[in-house]
Length: 98
Image (cartoon, rainbow, N blue to C red; front, side, top):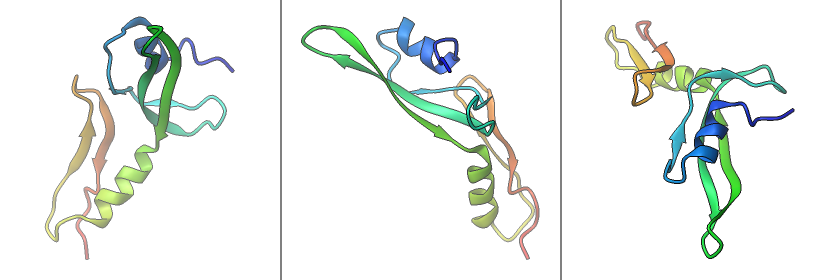
């Protein structure tokens, strides 16, 4: 399965200065699990060529459970957004804690 058409890969391939990049949410092709990625281009500094990317896929469900478990004791809502406003984890931990 190729990832060359995935947003997180294209950004690192096409922009030398992308830095650490947080992708939009996607469904893993091999895992079929909802995820978003944080990745960074790996470059051979002396040669100036790309060696690929360092990539970590994260589960939105993990963040939803984390926020639900650390929720304040009053009604609240939390979400995780990307800098451009894309929602990565919607309304995590929105229920009242006992």
